[in-house]
Amino acid sequence: MTDTSRYRLVLAALSLAVVLLFLMSLATGPAAIGFADSMRALLSGDAYEITLIMREIRLPRAILGLMVGATLGLSGAVLQGYLRNPLAEPGLLGISATASLGAVLTIYTGVSLVFPLALPLAALAGAGVAVLVVRAMAGGSGGTLSIILAGIALSAFAGAMTSLALNLSPNPFAAMEIVFWMLGSLTDRSMIHVSLAAPFMVLGWVMLALTARALDALTLGASAAASLGFDLRRTQLLAVGGTAASVGAATAVAGAIGFVGLVVPHILRPLVGSMPSRLLPASALGGAAMLLAADILVRLIAPERDLKLGVLTAMVGAPFFLWLIWRSRRTML
Amino acid sequence: MTLLAVSDLHADLGRREVLHGISFTVSEGEFVGLIGPNGAGKTTLLRAILGLTPSKGTVIIGNEVKPAPRVQARLVSYLPQEREIAWPVTVERVVALGRAPHLPGFAAPGEADLAAIRSAMRRMEVEDFAQRAATELSGGEQARVLIARALAQEAPLMLADEPAAGLDPAHQIALMKIFAGLADEGSSVVACLHDLGLAARFCTRLILLQDGRIVADGAPRDVLTDELLRSSYGVKSFLGEHEGGLIVQPFDLADGSGHGG
Image (cartoon, rainbow over all chains, first blue to last red; front, side):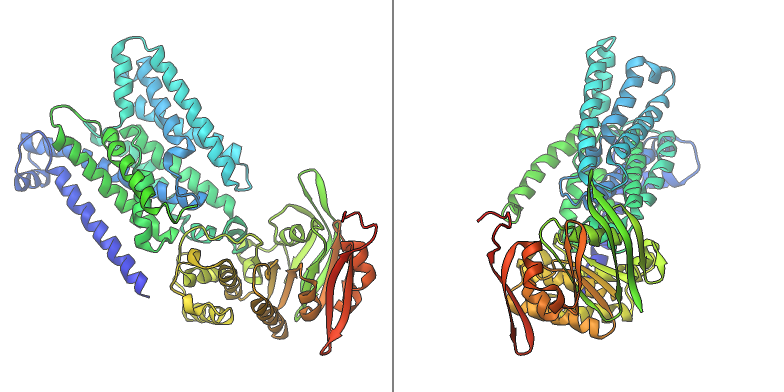
């Protein structure tokens, strides 16, 4: 089949882009280190300054960019396929909002100052609560509308609680820290963040990947998919649980980063013949590439100002999304 | 051999009981038309048989009560009334989805699967647009693509909900002949039909459903009587013969049927 070879080409091109952007991310930063020197330092075992910069600052940042981007792209593709709605994105289920709320509460109470890991852990707990609520609302029947509505309600509530924390914040610095954290960033993350997030993300990716075949069948609607032998309760558990584990972990270490999960599946869908299962690996790679690129850009555009990653993705993503809608407006209902 | 045995099936939608104790069996080689007025419970009956709607009673498919989903999917194919194709995937890929119950895990389709896909596309005359996006086709063409998907499943029993709706007369008749052909080959088809003319002409057996109960079950000539059509549908009908086949054409509301007019 010709479309299969084109699909392989798309995956190969995206993989190459991810590798190149990963290396570029490693080579980007305020310390002026040549590319060859930086790579040599990364691979050598000595304890010079360059090696420390590479291993303790740039490597975790690049790894997190890769993992967070892949998470957002993959979960966006799964949710769009599962809900059969091109507007679905990881934030829709309320997982990003509740994870943010968990993190914000640790900043608000000052716990994160005493025990820094409390922040990501509380974010993960927030994501866990979101799953329980969404699953309880959706019931076992696999209805998608109640999932969307529960997610919207949950996002609104978590948003209100976050605003309340800001409203009542003990001092302007705490409020400032909450706001900056919510903008989303990969600055100053360490290998501890990587090792904290990685298990949840990998677990989430496996769960999300297992939905692939069912997502293809869901193209024909829930009844047809069920009659083709797919257990839609299992698919729902995998899609919602996988999103919670991976996006919860991503939010825990990087804050809320919007638009990647929405835009990436959109861009790549036509390139993979619109098959939901094929969109999953493509979207994971595409998300990683986009987030690595954005994280390189924030460092190049304003090296002194600590431009936030989430600000850039939304700033570039939203107009791009408008353009996508404009381009396809004739084929939409 | 019996492919489907339903006994004392009850189902409710919300608080309203829609099926009140349905019992029937379907054997190999039967093309059963499920007829009855709107709200009689035809769709609910098909969904209850498949386990898509909760129900009480016994449904035996093949030799098993409540087979595992994948096992059931190899025994029964289902063509829902709503014709949904969510993404612009090619016609060939839509039809290929019918092979899902036969493919373990992430396996790619083998020779037998590809043959089944090709044969189903040929039968429904959708080969010419195999590589076009299914969402760009007309309603009738999409309907044929989805029927091809169900045929590709190659299950011995097919449950079809209004398969002929939205097709032109030639494709309606062609479809009924395909279903009759499947029955001749030893498969069975149970189809909800609103077109009594098609039901009369092509089905080997009709089940007339009214208010969640079977009011008649038998050969088309025994079920499609003026009396039964008046009492169940509330219509007067022309019943005749043409080239040895039964012709049924409702032409007016029956008096005092309560259907207004």
